[in-house]
Length: 305
Image (cartoon, rainbow, N blue to C red; front, side, top):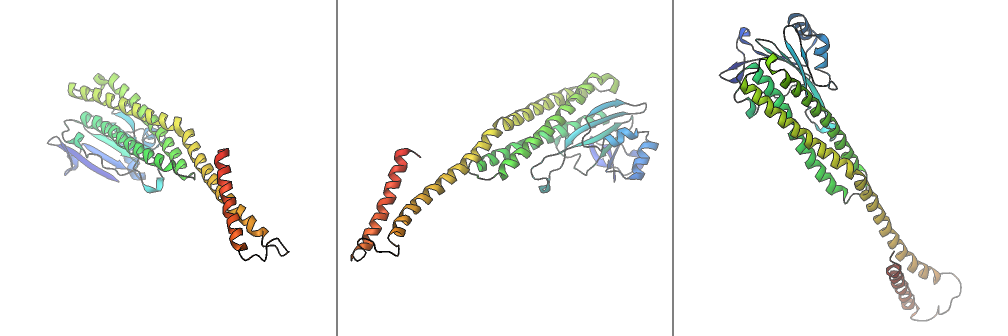
């Protein structure tokens, strides 16, 4: 699917004339659209396929007629992912008069305060990467909230469901850390080639801010990942301890029931026993049952079981 935009009045709007299109967005391009990108726009086929590969690393390449960038961004989360946050790749191909974006899913591209004022294609490219970094930060906050919620549930849980969810979040953080780190290397390459890319002073300043934000995002992902990994064994021990406490409680109940049951069974045997014709024998038996329960409770406390 193809969408066309243009920069009008420092804002991104849908183009009205094909001659004015400055931003071309291809979402999960089909065979004909890929052919147009390769043959008409001279985009390298391998680079084009890499921009649709979620496992591809971010990189910067200089081609004869354009500059090719691949950057990482968070994939839209759905309930089917079961707390697994995934990453995706996007391709940006910067020509002198247009910017071509290739993505594998339809996401809101030009929303947010970053796109309130766009002065050039270079500015738009940097703000797209900035939006990706900001998107990572938003997901990291969500992962942290989910982690806190799961931790509270693990404290009273006696099954592995929440622990498995925690492992899934830890796996997501590893993916995010690698993707953010990959974006950091891309941003560093952009900083080293500002003159070659023709960046203006304002765009260089934005690139510096982008580098700072990405480093902070990387540090935050690293901290969350380390915290989850370091406390995972402790959380597993909590679940095991909760189960042991349940077994202990059930054992106490079983013993407290078993001892008076033995007393009652003893006086219920179908043989002559002492006092079987005594008029108050029933109350004596109940007293013995109560006494046996009290003895077991005192013994349990004395032994500190």
